[in-house]
Length: 335
Image 1 (cartoon, rainbow, N blue to C red):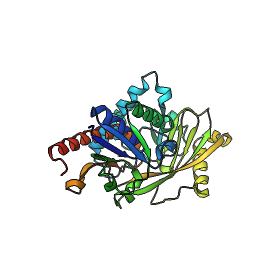
Image 2: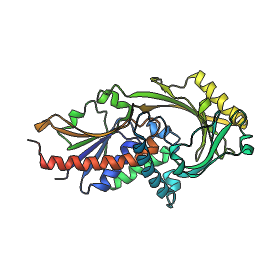
Image 3: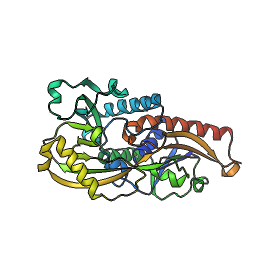
Image 4: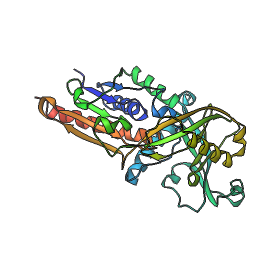
């Protein structure tokens, strides 16, 4: 009988983990359980810009490792004929600062990182320094359906279900992979998980070709395939999923000050998502219960604003932990 693995959650962390488990553990039967699927996940609304963001005390070496593996994975997809269907592309642009900043840890990974010249800084009044670089962009609205198709073609099963306790899965699966993001607060009682609320506009502005990120004024502009993302907010502890008029005004004015021509653009819609914030990413094994009620769990959640940036590297590690858990069950079968 095939070993049974259940992945809870169908965002970019859950689906990438499910696909990587299939690839790494031959013969395993993988099922994805989730309350929401694309296009209704947080990953669908994210711009998908590769850059580590809101990771708090996650060890820098892990951020570098997971981020690098994800970058290499996305680069491979970009170089494939399917890149447009997958939603992966290259995007160049600017980070601008009020005061000089140290080079970021990711500077050596992205393409063409350099400091802005005095002539370039004239484009951004009020900012004294900045960087230019080329990043990979992975749009969830295309990438998640691609992952789901890949998962199903490999024999994966999918069920819409709100899991209220991991122990309810013990009789049906050998290993459970917890990728429920912000839902981990309720599902596993992790009170360190809190939302970081992100509100954005999606606008039609096809003349905007470069990203522009100004953290000092909480503004960013990220062109995607069919529209441009204007952001944004990063409000800890705020669970409100409805656009707030004050935030809408601040985002609009902030982005229009950076690129005045945006005042002429047409708004497509506003969107709000809750980033799953935590003191650090939780990616580890845990054994719940014992004997016949024993359940092997792999936790993979708490990626803050870096779900897309870290997803494939974390999926790689999660799949290795699933392998270890399955081996431990063979050595210590349930009684």
